[in-house]
Amino acid sequence: MTGFDSVPEQHEAKRLLAAALAEGPAHAYLLHGPAGVGKRELARRFAAELLGDHARVERGTHPDLYVLEPLGDQIRIDDVRELRRDLHMRPFEAQRRVYLVFGADTMNEDAADALLKDLEEPPSYAVIVLVAEDLGPLPETIRSRCQLVPFRRLSERAVRDAIEARAPELPEAEVTTLARVAGGRLDRAERLLDPAAVKRRAALIEVARAVYLDPAFEPADATETLLAGISERGAEAKEKAEERVAVLEPTAREAEQMLRRAQRGAERDELLAVLEELEWWYRDLVVLAAGAEAAVVHVDRLAELREDATRERSEGAERACETIRATWRDAEELQLSTPLALEALLIQLRRELGGLSVMRS
Image (cartoon, rainbow, N blue to C red):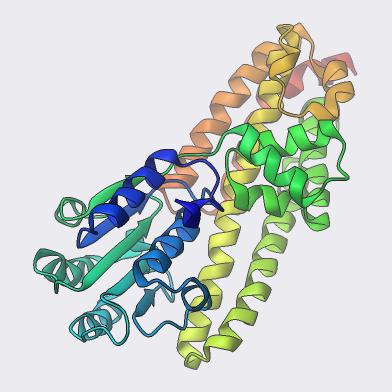
């Protein structure tokens, strides 16, 4: 189990994969669960144990390791066809060949059908490990031919430990806040520690408060503030992806697809994070008005929350949370226009929360 120790928690996933190592692996596994909770790292660790060479698996240079990731927004049939050609090559050094398919839930229908043929009758030496955030897009025929390995959001304690290790100088209140805002995701916790992310959060909370405190609040201006943060996050992701692309030396078309996917994915994730934190801010108003201070998410902003959390405002804050959750679900499931969705949301939040402040002013 020592090979899995670097991944916090995920006890069920570790148990299943450790049993596979002890008893002999099945032909296919499907690691599934939220982003940023250790799926990718544990998949690589599992591959390293199967191949017996941690260093080269970590570098991605082991001759019996095949890694497939979506270049654009999807894994397409040509990508799977190339994997299938490799699948029928016998191992070079190890006793088996391992195939890691990250973003398996992005396979289009043709790609999934092509992969299914080899999941039904795989070579005896092949172990295929699919990694997905969402089981929904994957056909039942794919899921039924894999051993499912579930991952869950991490506990607040696990995220706190990671933050304290990364930034031991942070005050306890800020560590608690970041651990709660991260929502059980280590990747989000890591990003929240970046100075640019600190500024984006401050701007977000300023918007959240302006909704009910500023008589001159303008939804269009607030939307621009939030969009600037989302775009900034996308640009950061694209810049990091450019470094990876330079090492891989793909074709110009492939490089463009990889960069676009990295940018769009980061912007979408940032939008969902913005909506989550907006909801948590208004939830904190409700919680504090009810006297449940220990349950507050934004512990580092208690002074402002105590000032803002009136019983009169609590009812509007509850409705605001419901409105934000509806927008979050739409953003998660549908292709939305982010500017239009955010402005419509802020107009509605102003209606729910702004009336008291405007009348009192």
